[in-house]
Length: 604
Ligand code: ADP
Ligand code: MG
Image (tube, rainbow, N blue to C red):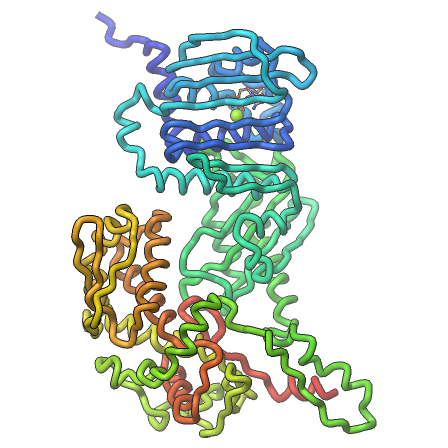
């Protein structure tokens, strides 16, 4: 008796579907790409329940006639390649003719489509790969495909879908990638009836801002390199905006998002010596290359790619990013250099008359923009406690403040090794001198860095000191948020945050020493926002770092805090006792140094 049999077609289709459709986000990717291939100008994505119950894409592209509409769901049916030769010149996103067949095999699909010049369109319903309805229909030109009840006939897969939030995070990732690659197309994303994104046709720079917030604009440097083999274009982050967390790194090859640790290492190589440890800069880099030089067929979901000359791409990428950073480095790196009222250059024209320059200071200029106004107001009140925050021996008895006298004397940057003179300018920056030049210290970041190191040590050794709240605090949290916090109860307790839970109510009874209630509120708000975005903190070490950053950020001194000579010296001494005083835990500069040369040049 022969044992080998052909698989029934619906099982073969389900198996094949498993390759293309891993989760709701894979459906989103395929449908968006089809709409792009169809030449759409506007694409709308509608999602319900993280895509588990509905994923719908509506476009205004070419549409399909009746025959094509039916053919589109056949396996290996594609309008995009006809000959083997075509395979080497692919410019479209899709080409395997597998996506719609795979999706239809594991979901309920409803299609409405009409070519631009037709009077009547077509409606097709398919369930688990079987056509259950096909009829002429009144519909707008273009295509609408609704995918419902994904994996309804593959219970094992449906069961393994993650929470709505996590699946939605994946969908948003796919949406962002496609929207970044096609800024000239308008996109919108609606989740459970709420508009998440509304993106108008625009250029890449604006699109990046529309997706990641306009603050991203000032963080980026343009990259551009053109050779016969490949063109590299896009933006890369200024070193100080690198982050510990990944998520803002994008490579596109011929407008297809790809992942590549090889190319990533080329970028990181370009940043060598410019980044604090473990930090990753944001980048949005686009490669244009003749399709015959790449192989996009090595991965079923096509996020990996091979160039026929990898070494050249690596070298060019590294050089072009380095070039972008180099250009930037020659520019003034001082924030307030951008303030025209501080521009001395006009004075050079009046050289014969040695006029004493009058420095006009812009009162509105606020280098601490990252803090919300409400927070700054609150902190102006809280600053009487400044000394407590700064002096670990009172507030945090487990760490020692190293005295200025014990500091190494050979450091050319260490001001506490040089002198005891400093002043605070405009209730903001601390100015002092060092052997390598005039040093301007950002007090908030410096303090944040010092506190971060202390909190981190305390968290690691489980010795965070806690203070009881005189009046327990009962915030209004949603039941979901209360559950989230409950999950982190023990870890939070280790960091001095203690609460009791009664049903949907939560009552805080203790917080870290040095905290005020508004610090606690801000901290929890940030924590909950991150947790509900699905950012996992399963590694204790990561959570410790995170908590330490939050604790430090909440208690560091804000702009507008007057620091007396003792406080200034303490801050400087503590900062320069750290192994890496240069960068804040968020990877931003703690101080800058104006060398004598730079100052001389200003007067030339
Ligand atoms: P592929 O994209 O690899 O060709 P798909 O299964 O994704 O395979 O789609 C099959 C075919 O259906 C496409 O080649 C295209 O002709 C047609 N099609 C799919 N989606 C659309 C759409 N939104 N607008 C117009 N035609 C479409
Ligand atoms: Mg396709």
